[in-house]
Image (tube, rainbow, N blue to C red; front, top):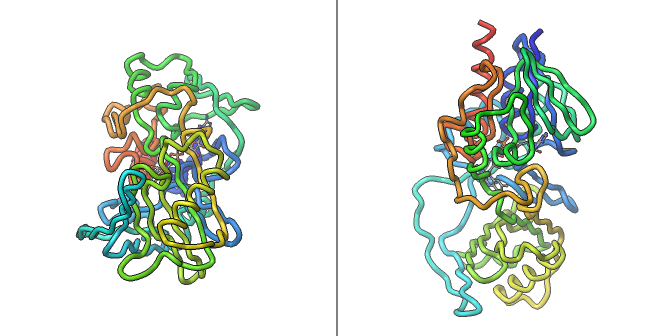
Length: 349
Ligand SMILES: Cc1cc2nc3c(=O)[nH]c(=O)nc-3n(C[C@H](O)[C@H](O)[C@H](O)COP(=O)(O)OP(=O)(O)OC[C@H]3O[C@@H](n4cnc5c(N)ncnc54)[C@H](O)[C@@H]3O)c2cc1C
C-alpha cells in the first residue's frame, strides 16, 4: 500500500485525509501541536465557547460550503444589527453609524469552527501523531521526514505548513529551487499578524435599541468586535480583534484594558466576565517564525507556482495560501486539500 504522509492537522491536511479515506493509500498525519485545527481554534472556558481562530464564511466559499453540507455541520448567520459604534476616542467621541447592507449573509458554525475539524478528524482514517515537529525532508525515490524525535518514511508528501514558515524552518534534501524558496519566503500567512479575542459575560448588557455588538476603533484596544451570543447555550459573548499595538501586553493586561473600554462604552459600573481568552497569533509557534520578515496581507496568495508538484510530483504544498480559490481562507484550505487528494487519487488510476 503506497503511503501518504500529511504534514499538519489543520483544515487543509484533515480535508485531504478525509478525501483519501476510502482509497488504497495508507495515510498518516504529523502535527507539531498537541491539538488539531491549526488556525482554527475553539476554546472551551467555563462552559463558554470562545472562538480564537477562523470564524466566518459566506455562500461564495463554495468548496467549504460543499464540505459542510456533506458532513451536515450546522451553521448560522452572523447577526450584526443595523447600527455599529465607532470609538474615535481619545481624539474624538463614541459615535453610532448605520451598517451598509452587504447584500449576502455571513455565516459561522453553530458549535464553533472546531466542530468542522472534529468531524473531519472522526471521519478520516489516518493515524495522527501529535507533538511531531518536522525539521527536514529528504527525497530519493521515497521520502524520509525527520521530526525532533522521530523519523517517518512515505511515498507521497502533502505539506500544509504555512509557506513562509516552511522557508524559515524546514530543510530539503535535495534543496528546492532558489526561486521557489524565495516565493515561499514572500508568501503571506493570512491572519498571522492578528490578536483575536473572545469574551463571555453573565448578561448581554451591550444589546439595546438597534445595536447588537458591532464596534470599530482605530486607537482603543478593541479594533473590531461582533456579537457572539448563543441562545441555545445561554451564552452572552463578544468576539473580535485587538489592536496589534497591544501585542506586548500580557493576556491578563489586555483583558483589563478591554474591560475598561467596554465599561466606558456601555456605561456599566461593573460587570462579571465569565470567560476571556485571546491569542496573539504573531507570537504563536507553528504559524510564523519570530524573525519572519513583514509581508503585505495576501502577498503571493494563490500564486499558481505554489501549486506545482516537486520530486517527480510526489510532494505537494497545500496550505490555504496555495489555493486557486479564496487563498488564505478556510475555503482555500478545503479547496486545495481536496485538489491535492484528487491529484494523488489519479495516480492510482
Ligand atoms: C485569528 C484568525 C482568524 C481567521 N479568521 C478567518 C475567518 O473568519 N474566515 C476564514 O475563512 N479564514 C479565517 N482565517 C484563516 C483560516 O484559519 C485559514 O485559512 C485556515 O485555517 C488554514 O488552514 P491550513 O490547514 O491551510 O493551515 P493551518 O491551520 O495553519 O494548519 C497547518 C498545520 O501545520 C502544523 N505545523 C506547522 N509547522 C509544523 C511542523 N514543523 N511540523 C508539523 N506540523 C506543523 C500547524 O500546527 C497546523 O496545525 C483566520 C485565521 C486566524 C489565525
